[in-house]
Image (cartoon, rainbow, N blue to C red; front, side, top):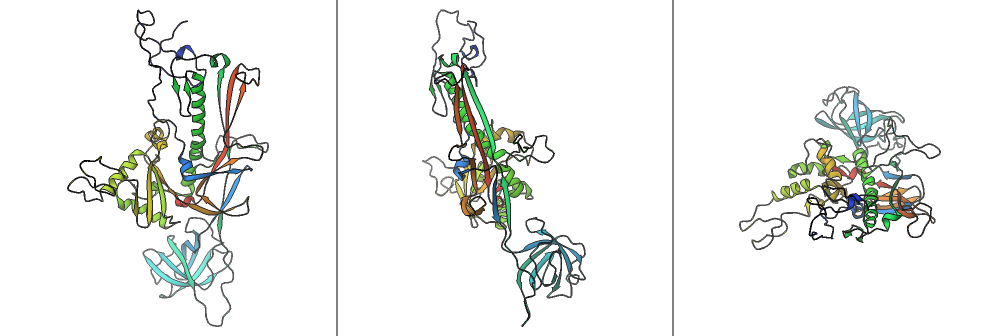
Length: 477
């Protein structure tokens, strides 16, 4: 048999035992007096190659039996809005949206008699609302310390006003003048599962051959049968796909060339992954002027200020790439006075006779605890690490801050409030069928199931990620 020379040995992903997968003597070929000593154990030069496990650390998994997941999240308790001055002399303003940027112009909660703080243009005044008609975005106020808003220094068309309701004042013996009650507000979100597929196939003839090099794999494969390694790598890669798709996927946008599903079910609509959810409903450090959490503590405090405006979850986890992790170590170390007998790093004084610990696993700032961990997905050149290297500044993802603990949300399917991790994966399942991670084998190898002279291993999963309370997450760009 002719031997095709190769500059490097490599196990092919499919149809393993071929001429391209034999070891060749590159210099003299097989026409020599003495054969070389063959090292038959495959070297594992990339270490652990899988990246799955992130969602297992920070979330949970739950079965579902529908094509869609709908959940509701609580709104803020207190009333705060953005507004524009329409007439400073008449102390008239028009509400544009709430403090989170949601347009509620005609459904705001400000009522006659409410006491409000109004800030903008470098001044703050206290006022009482005298007109707030239902279904109208316009309100009139009477400042406590001035004749009108113009006297207080406000001008017309000032669109930077912030209004906070902090109480109410009513005259003696009067009926309630507010006119309507405020109902709890909540926001409904939805996501849908996607179907992931993969397949591995080896012919019956190749499955009966034995290789010369002992193989090993992440799933425990070992021996001299190459197809075992290829099938195991396909399985490991698919396991990673199940996690990466929950992190990177996006919903199909209007105008996309991707065909949306029809009534018959054909087409794909995508699903909202972790990064997409945080970009649309959470925070990004690149959106904070000058913020880079890896440079100094003052800039990191700007991130804490954003958390203070939202849920203020006390415990948070940082999953970072190597560069950001080391930069935060250096930032924390710079707060240290450096001991005279050796570098004083961490929670103890390192002595000259022990290995120097130059890293931090966690720290506390203000009322927040942060636990830091390297994320292989952001470091590996074959995954997000390579994409980040090619991305423009601000588009690369250096890490993510995820709140620890659970959130309380209303589950539409169960009809009640549930305590769940902020992140959890929903997969399709019923009493008859589970599509969490499904695999089946067809073909002629082993127990024959078809007339195809091959072994076909099929992999399937149907799942989506639920990101609850995305306002408590932050991407580090």
